[in-house]
Amino acid sequence: MNTSGNETHVIFGSGPIGLALMKVLASQGKRVRIINRSGALPQAVPPGVELRRGDAADPDAARALCQGAVVVYNCANPAYTEWPEKFPPLQAGVLAGAASVGAKLVAMENVYMYGPTGGRPMTEDLPYAATSRKGRVRARLAEELLAAHAAGKVRVAIGRASDFFGPGALQSTSGERMFAPALAGKTVQVLGNPDLLHTYTYVPDIASGLAILGQRDEALGQAWHLPSAQTITTRQFIEQICQMNHQKPHIQAAPRLLIQALGLFNPLMRELVEMLYEFEEPFIVDNTRFGKTFGDIATPLPEAIRCTAQWFLERAGKLNGSALPAPDAQA
Image (cartoon, rainbow, N blue to C red; front, side):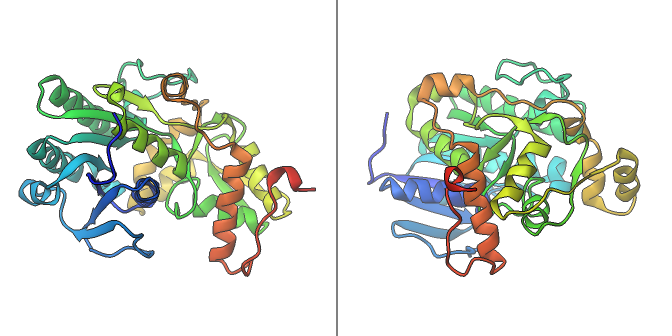
């Protein structure tokens, strides 16, 4: 069931995915309310979008912020080092807000809950077998969402994606640490084995997928792997980035022992240690079910990489308004 432009769509979180979803919904003529803790955005607010300041972990505040909503999207994330403490109350607040107004709740998740698969492609029917602390948190949150749906408390749809990249995505493992050095011809340091298959998901495709989940009733009560282009190896992914700026690829894999040693002093690196399995076996996210149900809307990978490279080069002041050629027009 499609919503009309007079109904409000509420987005909690203004990271790369929340901002991309804001643009998708605004382009469809929806009334959008986007909420974060600062009340500020790193870009201009599009027409038809209302920016509000609020704490999603406060149920009373979340209820007030959700007034008038037909769909609520949870794209908010606590700091990576604070998941066990802050994620449960954050989700509880958003769920309370959506339930209070009878809105659908579309939750953005990753795929940590599945745990290591031995290289087997991840499908939505895989059991939750997380071996990491963050994966167990993700599994518990997903179970709580689906239980709330089954109990009739709130109508829920879940979208899941792999490591993401795209304009504005700086902190992802496939963000600034990969694109900036690759485009500059410098060495890209990667986790694990770069010659294993690894699914990377384009942020605008994630946003388009979440918008579909919010507007199609057949999405409810289920988790969906959001659109991703073909899976290639991390080395091939970096090579395509380098080609965008006519650079030769230079790749260095960080040994597990080095990551573990750095984790003794760096809290973020310490959190990465338990997730290294994602880069030490093929990491393939299968989104066949989404494509069969809603259509294949994934941006071709070369075009997605080109648009992301364009953004990073413009950010670095290297393009001066010129555009990178389309992939099929490159030499």
